[in-house]
Image 1 (cartoon, rainbow, N blue to C red):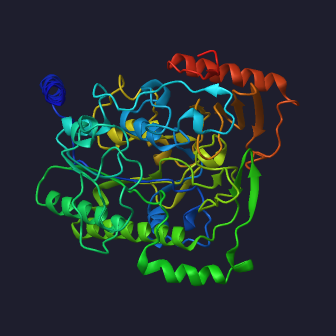
Image 2 (cartoon, rainbow, N blue to C red; image 1 turned 90 degrees about the horizontal axis):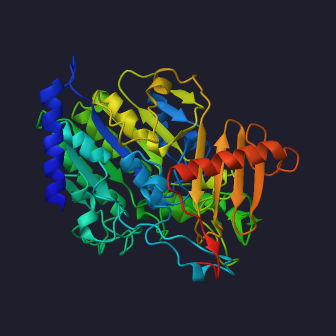
Length: 485
């Protein structure tokens, strides 16, 4: 199946070049470095307001690129967002609307609904962003978390990546963050080797090899960190344990109820902080290598997260590792804390050190990177994405944007099946068990504390209708009442 897929890709690429010739260039095509962090919260970087975590390398990257304040993951959990990045399509259209394989409905507390079935493999028929770049002569490399296929024929090496270091079916590192990794696509390193370091080393080796060739590269580094298990990095652990003791109350976290769960309100977990710092240090290693190879100026760099930070868990005994206040809730929830993420983009020729308030989402990376690389768009593929190049050229530019999140499943964070829509300043959240809606004005209530659905019923009704029309157009499915499935 994979061989047939690549034959078609090569024929398509040959046909395009024969018909139109390669795009005219005055400079070498840019390289692409895409860095995806797992479960990194909106407030987990210094440039986004964290004072407990330390991210000097990423803060400097933000100063050389554009930092987005209103960037969103396509979904509150990982696999759907990853599918959106790879395809340029809304997760609902792809058919992956939960993490793979998802939480059985029976594990939820008193579930009233039965969640719809979704698919557990990214279809090979999709023209992934890696395949689009590979068609145009780019060398492609993947390292880290994949989580888009239950069986090997759907893993990165069959989805456009020439090299796959560590991408397989699991969403968290099966052996933890220290070798042995128990990873079928990554050989074990020496005892004491840390996974985040190792994945970066593999990426640097690829860049070293790429510098010896004239072909540009598309490098996708998908860190497993900062996903559970929360295992600090030894060289930073003691620093953050000491830093925690200097916080008010020695860093004991403040908590708030959220549905059947509780949300952490303060950042003080030393092991999580060490994981963030290690990730940042490894980003610094990547940037240093690009500069050493004299590739930095001609490389597009994207840094973001697959969903919001893990702030909310259902049981009193479980305390989540991070906090994203003032945003509400976290990973697994369609409130802002679960979907708003950090995003930094650095590209040749764009303004430096600027901030953009333009709402953007994961599907936008596909058309954006093609345009930045001067490659032909794939309009039939990235149908739900929008190029961000106009906002990179003019960071002050802000246009109206409507975004929808459809999550008709139960999640271990305490989320119950529902959906959400943001249109301008308005945000509507619907929960399907109670068939209830909540309406928030994000321009005045980023915390989502003041439900205005009763005050503005017409606005709520219009947004709800718009949201369901969006879901319908993409073939969305809904949960059903127990006993009716």
